[in-house]
Image (cartoon, rainbow, N blue to C red):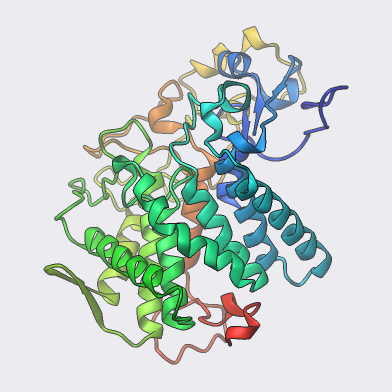
Length: 420
């Protein structure tokens, strides 16, 4: 493969495809761990294994002033990765250096914007992942840089710009944590600082508003006053869109369990918002219910994670999974025989979460219906986060509070030396 490798562009072999297609998006890739490496016309019309592709692959190159969201998301991803890979000091330092350089470039330009509004940069990505804002990604990036470096300049940027990022949020994204919206997750991270490293002035205002936002979000998860649920119990965060419902349910599961852990660490039994009250226990119950639904506790008794349980999707909308490994190179025109086949995929895409059911708990296991059967890396990232949050702590882990509590309240702050 020579993906993007030419006299004009760097070699872009490697990385991950976005979903059942053969397209790479840097934005959603950075969200999962961030830019577009594909030829959508061919990638969508050719039902072909990645190994068999021989058509030109276009690479979109973005000016920093028109890709603030993309730069912010990539910076955040590298900062977070540096914390995970901290034991390899060389790699961690390289990640932080690149994250800082990209962030400084992004906030230092006179003009800022979303990459999908620029045809040369993200025009082809717009039909798949149309970014609606950029301030949330920059605030998100600044916050992760603060955790990665301990430099309060980054925290200052995030807290000073948090309110304007909230105002930029589109109504349909309110309460959602996904590739396009980081407000909910940023609120929870700011609340974490307030609870476990209260830095006071000049950050107090943003900390308080983020806590209020987080409490309102948790109330909306545990009650039916804002978001409804299917008869089977799946929360409907964006029911009016054609987006996969499960991708929002798993991030809601993750965030609610994370906040439940916060409350347990604080030894707080409950919190309130307006006329509602929620407890750590109710948050954990909600979190567990969403994952249980996805793993088979639903009206169809169907696991929406491939390879898990007795019944799961076998016609996953995924090129490589649907075409047999028979040693033969297949050209584009041959692909439809597998796309339209009624047989199960010859290759099991183990661990992939499909798009899932509709708001009536209805699901059709048909490869030709991607709105039911297509997986994507952004959705699976949320699933992994939720599963880890709900998993029992490692053997030998001492939790004086009891319950499933796998977070360390001080670990995120080990680089914040001056505030310890």
